[in-house]
Length: 77
Image 1 (tube, rainbow, N blue to C red):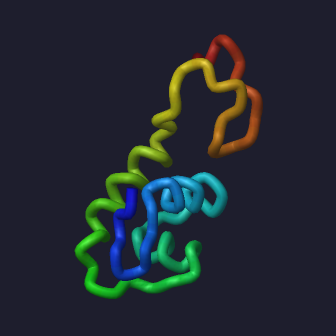
Image 2 (image 1 turned 45 degrees about the vertical axis):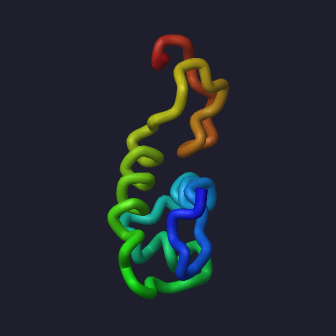
């Protein structure tokens, strides 16, 4: 789904940036994706996607953590 129509950013691109670059602000997400904020209407949505992605909101049973790249042990799940 497109979350930023000015830069044509998708929710999956934002999640990928969060998992690979670990940005801390919506502005850093734009930088990771090679663009800059335009109108700012998507900043709140991007922040929500970041919070979800960086909080480890993956499904139980993932063989590898998308944030660390490390195998997930059964005790952690």
